[in-house]
Image 1: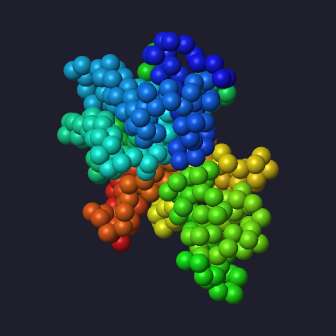
Image 2: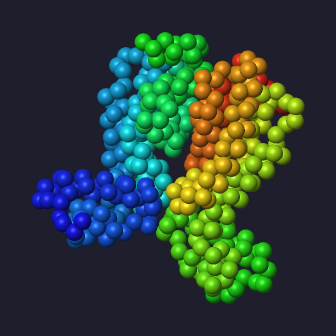
Image 3: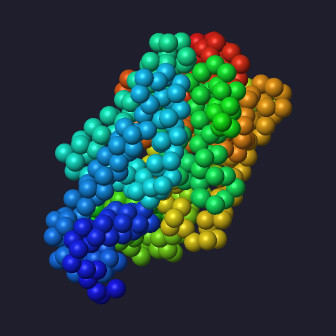
Amino acid sequence: MARTIGSDGGRTEAAIREAAISLMARFGYEAVSMRQLAAEVGVQAAALYRYFPTKEDLLFTLLCEHMDGLLSAWEAARPANADPRERLTAFVRNHIHFHVARRHATHVSNMELRALSRDNLTQILRLRTAYEKELRQILRDGAEAGTFVIDDTGLTAIAIIQMLTGVIVWFRPGERLSVEEVAETYLAMTMRLTGAENARENTHVRAHA
Amino acid sequence: MARTIGSDGGRTEAAIREAAISLMARFGYEAVSMRQLAAEVGVQAAALYRYFPTKEDLLFTLLCEHMDGLLSAWEAARPANADPRERLTAFVRNHIHFHVARRHATHVSNMELRALSRDNLTQILRLRTAYEKELRQILRDGAEAGTFVIDDTGLTAIAIIQMLTGVIVWFRPGERLSVEEVAETYLAMTMRLTGAENARENTHVRAHA
């Protein structure tokens, strides 16, 4: 553990990020010291500070990457010229798959906003708003088309995102349900929640297609 | 701050709990020391240990009280001999009102399960399961009566609870919406999510009754 991982700076930085996510998910940001993190990665604390001058820089980097990754994943998954129902289907599947694959990072991202300085917090909240806006637009388009029944677009978007993200609290790969099965069940619930008619039949057809 | 709060042990204990919830919600359990907590309350650390021999005893007490309080609140709110729709309505309203009034305690309860010893964790999970069972029973009764459409009772119960609890992340009293308005919007979403027919019309009538 006392050995430096190698001269490959990219690999060291990746190792620092991975260890930071794992330690912070377990003990919380405040309780994890840069010294402890350096020991975990197997580098000197001084080396750590070369990559991340402060612990908050490190946290901010982790939270930025998480949101950038989520926005990129959605950009790639978003169907072009699709109707609101198809777009919502793609959104639900992408959201669940992305977060299940990044359980610890999601945990840290949701918990440690409190530790950010005001400017850094503003930047992260801007990325979150951009993501939420994508869902709000789908819901608004669907309500206008008469596909969805929505009382409050903002509240519905938040409710759906929190319901879907909640999967990471209990889901573990290799147990009763596969991530695909979980995603289809949550998709059916989302379709009903948004008042999409015949949602049940449609999503079942899709699930078995 | 150096003065002991008084000889009233009950009051001191309540002050310790309140300060612990507030500090742990802000910094996380691991980062809060018994010394820091004693300073916040204005007692000697030795006095603190008289009430709570270890920091984990304190955390466990907080988490037990939170879940006992939730179960008692539901016990008092649960309508007798009511149909599944009325019971679900009462469940949603009680859940949102309870958690909005205990935002920091909810935050600590959801985050710090990781800090409990195995025996204490088992006890808290048992209380959580008892609460979830109440909702599962409502969903099962509603599905059997043909009122609700449920694919997976367990997943639906978890999804509803996480969606409702998520309110504490963004809701602040005195802003755009009252807690009653938020509860009614979430009730309408829950009714649609569970496939209750004509849920929209019914909940709107109730909201304005």
